[in-house]
Every structure is written in structure tokens, then in C-alpha cells.
View (cartoon, rainbow, N blue to C red):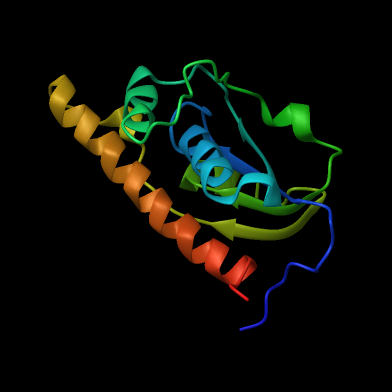
Length: 150
């Protein structure tokens, strides 16, 4: 399979979209930055931004990734900008934003909202870890296609 990334010195611009920009898109942004480094310029936003969930911060800290200073950002901030990829990580964002002007390519990864998990804190943190690990799987696969070795 041929990569869609053209050999340029410019990093690939990626925007992750979710509803609240509180967990899934925040974790995806930090994970991609961690995995790909300078090969990407990565952002995240929400259709209805709120605040970064403390359990998302904890789940990421387990990997040594600090998102404690991350802020929840509105999709409006990025309108008018161009991105090589826009990746929605929740069904509501995919429905609310079926077309993102300036998106070169679009992906959708349907992931459950760990912020909606019930149970005690241990059970809720387990849900955040599950979503974090699924994001890692998606991102590793995407990177293998977008930036093939050799």
C-alpha cells in the first residue's frame, strides 16, 4: 500500500475531533505527538468543548505523557485552517461535522466515551485505559501506513 504522505519537509497536519475535547481527542492528540514527534503537527478540538477529564490525565500519566496542562478547545478555532487529516473519534462529532472544510483526508474511529463510564473510580479509570489503548492501536496502524518504514 502506498503512503498518502508526500515526501516533504513539512509535517503532516492532523486534527482530532470529538464532542467535548475532554478525553478521546485529547488522548489521541498527545499519543500521536508522542509516537510521531516532529513528523506531525497535531491538534484536537470539540464541537462542544468542556474541560480535560482528570481520569484522561491519569491514564496518560501511566505512559509518562503529561496532559495536565491541556485545554479543551472549540472546533471554531480551527475553521479556515487546512489539515492533511481530520480524524473524528466519536460518533457525535462525525455526525455534527460530516465535512470539515480544509481537510485533505478524513477518518472516523468510533470509540466509546470513557467520561460516560459508571462505577467507582477504579472501574472508570479502567474505561479510560481501554480507550487509550484502542487509540494506540489505531494510531500505530495509521502511522505504519502513513509513514511506512524504509
